[in-house]
Image (cartoon, rainbow, N blue to C red; front, side, top):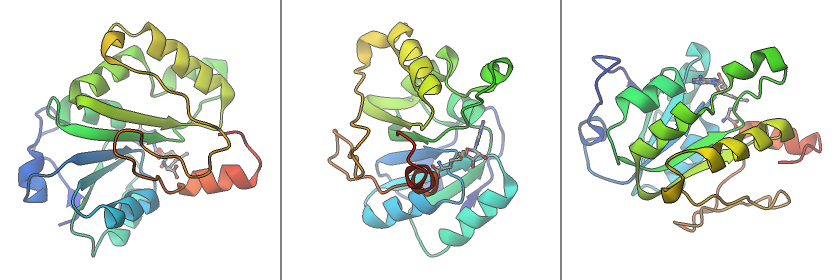
Length: 195
Ligand SMILES: C[S@@+](CC[C@H](N)C(=O)[O-])C[C@H]1O[C@@H](n2cnc3c(N)ncnc32)[C@H](O)[C@@H]1O
């Protein structure tokens, strides 16, 4: 079973039960068609990978990609509530929020996923020393996220690092994992967008 259908939307699930083993958990928020998720899962078979995506068609595509990969599960859900309600405290080694919708129009900014509440939920779900990777091609959103992270009350536990925009093979400073480019990253780089 690749697609995860939780019994309730307001109680945390047990990752050990879902993956049928205990292993470090990495979560891709807005995983799209699951390309990045599945590539990473195949590179790191000793870890568990959960993709969260709200669009049904993309969830179906991610499930098809993950069909033969044991350490992947996909959840159709809205990211903010899934992080807040479904992930147990200190259960996630790494979150990926890669190319979240930037909602460029000012009147749509309130739809952006990164808010103080979201950062607090991430902080609660992360293991000590856990990592949240965020990538965007949209400078205004980057600056907005930077301001929020610096102002968040959980900041004493946070170390904020800005990656090198020219680095086409970014890596996770905690695990040393080289991160493959996502589908949207390839698209944006091809257009010459700064990442
Ligand atoms: C620009 S795409 C990036 C996809 C992928 N991360 C990549 O880099 O190739 C943004 C993805 O996030 C999903 N998404 C946007 N808002 C979401 C939300 N609130 N909850 C879950 N998924 C969301 C979209 O449906 C879309 O698949």
